[in-house]
Amino acid sequence: MIKSILSKSLVLLFGMTLFYACQKGKMKEIIFPSTDLSSENLIPKPLKIIPTHNAFGLDHTTAIYTSQTDKSFEEVGSFLADKIKSKTNLRLAVNKTDAGQVNRMIFINQSDSEELEGPEAYQLYISKDSIILNAKTSEGAFRGVQTLRQLIPETSNDTLAEMPLWPIATGKILDKPNFEYRGSMLDVARHFFSVDDVKKYIDLLAYYKINALHLHLTDDQGWRIEIKSWPKLTEVGGSTEVGGEAGGFFTQEDYKDIVAYAQQRYMIIIPEIDMPGHTNAASVSYPILNGNGKTPKLYEGTAVGFSTFDTRKDTVYAFIDDVVREISAITPGPYFHIGGDESHVTKKNDYIFFVNKVEKIVQKYGKRMIGWDEVAQADIDNSSIAQFWDSEKNAIEASRKGMKVIISPAKKAYLDMQYDTLSKHGLHWAAYIPVDTAYVWSPESYAGIPKENILGVEAPLWSETISNIDELEYLAFPRVIGYSELSWSTEENRNWENFKVRLANQAPYMDRMNVKFYPSKLIDWKESRFTYKTIQKD
Ligand code: TNX
Image (tube, rainbow, N blue to C red; front, side, top):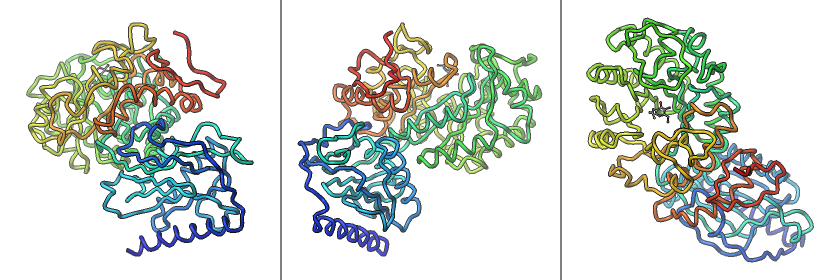
């Protein structure tokens, strides 16, 4: 109650400031050409848009104010100010009472309105003089800020007023996500990617309201996260990668840095330690862990399914306990991914025994277990989550057990699948996935899993064929933008013909962010004002 009175009085105060500014004749009426909020190029498409066909003029006399009752709202306001600065070069004041001449305001408001369903819901009320962004939580405000960023034109209109001005279409947006989990995965094990690469990917994903980044931290070819109690994992196991290149790993400080960066963007990091298969790098580092009967050697190839932990050795579980403990302690998100895929040389009963035991370790450290769909074969708890990548049978079994499922079918959602036979990078064991195929399907009904069992959608990017950020971007963009819409927007609001146009209009943003996206010929890409054009002819 007090909170809402406080925020109402803030609105009133700044409303009065605006009123007096107008009275004094400081503000000239600007006549905007007609706008249509409902045809703006927003991705993911919001739940409801009601246009009012006028415009808010964003310029140097605009200021940002936020609810003062919650510090994190102010941080969201500063994030918006930074992004406006890098897009328009306008430096807007945040919560300053002496902000100079303020003609228009953006107010980010903590609201307890019942219309806001869930922590990520937000409402945007855009009128000529003010933009009010309502959300229950700063997380919802952050999602709304992404919508607002997308509504700001890439170029100013310099004919409407004396100073550059960015017209924002007026109206009302009511929005909330269709699925609570909207993710991508990055495989840093087959090829290592630096902290800066991961941060760039996080930034791009956050712009499209993706809220989970799953890091595939270990595999046969490399162990990429420092474990203080088992130092050889990175000393030995981190030294290689596919194709004989140098490898690398994140120290725990690096990992914390990534986690904090993601957290500022309301994104969780899901660490994956893949086991009992895909464990060659761990077994080379500590041969006592090995269960395939051979002497493990460093591996730089791309075959899968040849390694396994010894599932009947106590040392293996003591090791896993240490790994889960150390990583969980620096992971604020609720999940821990144990892999569990393609354990082709682990006997079925050993596999089940293993998954059951590891689930308990994960729970002991306060996390919910996620595993690739094979884990549904074990006797696991319905609080654990199966990630459907390959077997519909396993996915259905998981939902029958009351588990939640993350939808990532390789045929539809794998970012490492080639676009077509001419693609420079990627594999095609599951399918070729052109930009339309990636978008035109329904996670809601793909495998007959009841919607209430679906936690969300994730698009994994495996890195056997990519070794730098340009190649990463070639596979991820533009497809991952479509996956953001598949997980945020409702089925009724998704439409390929309409999406195609909105996607075409992401080119200027991607160019500005120096994203080397794949310029699919299915899309009529919008020309960009940026000189470093990425559109190659191939
Ligand atoms: C299958 S998907 C794998 C990965 C490979 C990927 C390549 C999954 C759970 N396992 O080990 O990198 O295919 O597309």
